[in-house]
Amino acid sequence: MLTADQIIADLKQRANAQAVEGMARFGIRPAQALGISIPTLRKMAKDIGRNQVLALALWASGLHEARILASMIAEPQLFSAELMEEWVNDFDAWDVCDQVCWNLFDKSLYAYQKATEWCQQEKEFVRRAGFVMMAQLAVHDKQAQDGAFVQFFHLIKRYADDERNFVKKAINWALRQIGKRNGNLRAVALECAYEIQHIDSKMARWVARDALKELQAKEIKN
Image (spheres, rainbow, N blue to C red):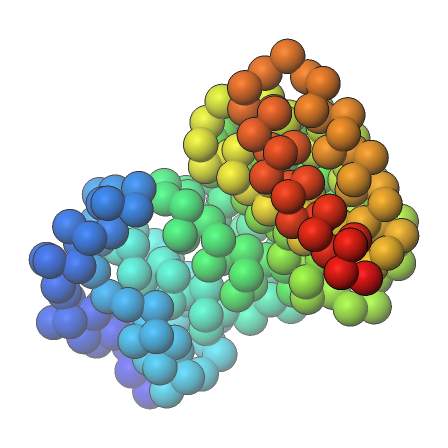
C-alpha cells in the first residue's frame, strides 16, 4: 500500500505550471496548486481505493490536488460532524469546495444539517459549501422527500443578495437543482425565484433571472 508521502511525491511529479495558470483564469488561485486534472485524480483514487487514514494525511499536507484526492478516497461513514467542520473551514477555492461536497460530504449522515448550518456562516467558501450541498443533495439523494428541500427555500431567499460571486453562483445552483427535481418542487422554486426578483439587489435579481430562465423552460417542456 502506498504511503501518503509516496502519493504526494507522485502528485508533485505530475505538476503542470501551465495548467496552474489556466486554473487562475477560472478563479482558482490556491496557494499550493499543482495543476493536475480531475480525471487524473479520479484514476489515482480508483487505484488507491477508500482509505480514511491516507485521506486525513493527504488533507493535512495542504496541497490543493492532494485535498481533492483525499475527498475521493475518504470514507463518508467515518466522518464526524466535527471533522466536517475542520475540513470545510480549510476550503480556499471553489473547486475544492465543490469536489469535497460532491465526493464526500453529501454522503454523510450530517449532510442536511451541514447544508443548513454552513449557508448561514459568513466565510465565503463555507457559505458556498452550504448551498453546493443543497444542489448536490437534490441530484444525489433519490429517496429524500420534498420536505427535505422545501426547508432550504427560505435560506436561498435570505442570502440571495450575497455579493460574492462564488456564493451567488452556488445559491443560483441550489435553486435550479431543487426546482428541477420534480414538478412540485419546481412550482415552489418558481415562487421563490419570483420573490427574489423583487429584492433590491443586483445580485439577487441575477440569481432569480438565471434560475427562471431554466425553470420556466423546464416547465414549458413538461
